[in-house]
Every structure is written in C-alpha cells, then in structure tokens.
Length: 212
Ligand code: DC
Image (tube, rainbow, N blue to C red; front, top):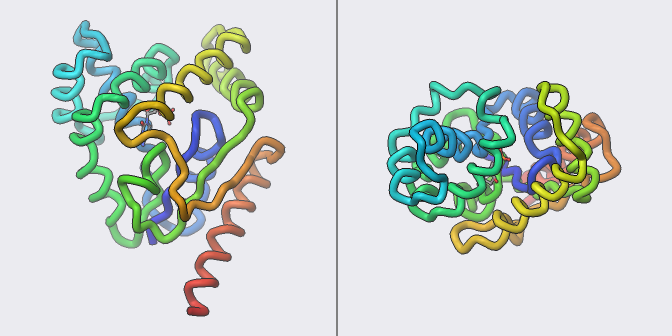
C-alpha cells in the first residue's frame, strides 16, 4: 500500500504521515528532508541555493542515510530548501530515490508537495492536508521555540506565506492537490483528531476498493 500525503508547511502532514506509517506498519519518508539536505550541502559549500548547477550536483550526490534531522530543520535551511526545490533538475535527480522508496514492501507513506501528483500518482490513498496560515504559523513558532530558536510570530507567518507562494507557483511539480486526493483540513483539529480523520479517510478508501 502506498499512501501519499501532500500539503503546505506546518499543515500537520508530517505528524500524520509518521503516525499512519507506524499504525499500518509501513515505511515513512519525509521528502522535504531531501530538499533540505540539498540546500544544506549547497550552503555548507558556500554557494547560493539558486545556483542550479551546484544544487543539481548536490542532489545527484545525496546520501539519505546520512541525514541529521535537527540541523535540517533550521530556519535558514527551510528557506533555502524552497529555493532549491524550484529547480527542475534538482527535482529530477531525486525522483528515482523517492519512487523506489514508495515501492518497498510492504508499502510506504511519503509526505511532501508532489507525492500524489508526480512521485506516486498511482498511490492507493492520497491526502491533501491544509490548515489556515495563522494556525500553521503558530504551530511552527512552537516547534522552532522548542528547538531553541528565537522567532517572532509575524516573521514566521510572512516566511510561511512566501514559501507557500514559491512552492505553489513554481512550474516544476508545484504544490497542488491531485484530482483524486482527499482534503483534510486540520485548522481546528489537534494531533489526535487529525490522525483519526486521516485513518477514517484511509479506511473508507480501502472499504470502497474491497466492495468493487
Ligand atoms: O516539507 P518541508 O517544509 O520540510 O519542505 C521543505 C521544502 O522542500 C519546501 O519549501 C518545499 C520543498 N518540497 C518540495 O518541493 N517537494 C516535496 N515533495 C517536499 C518538499
């Protein structure tokens, strides 16, 4: 079983994806980490994230077994990841790894922006997770402060909106719901309620398949 979970930053898709993978016994890939790792490699080497050649080289050389999650979640990497993610050759270099991951037995949950549209268009279940920008910014502030970063809510909201815009407007695999994705709005849902809503959708889709 392949489950594709897409949506904008801090919509809750990562938490839902992790929990769904644990409950159904599936592999989980946070595909945002791939773009973050490319961004970090480019910045560490002293280049600009919009340098397409350097970013593509970093994407080709990427070794996902060596990721350090904490360093990849820093705000400076977040911004640069959205820039490298708009480069078509970078996306192209990361496709095979994601598609191979998706077909690992017994199945996988992948979360990102283009899983249901580009990486796994044949996924068994597709969720598109959204929440209001204000609620997403408040969640991100809590997360960043828990990590020890000093941030202002207004700045985080502005960053988030800028990133949404860049991720949705780019020509290569923009953030958008697949036509057959199920919308899940977590604006008024806590973590448990969002997880239960996701399970309800998955179970309804599976039940519908069995009946056919
Ligand atoms: O999900 P995230 O915030 O960790 O993602 C970081 C950036 O990577 C985000 O700005 C958009 C990009 N991204 C993407 O373009 N496609 C994906 N499948 C996942 C992330």
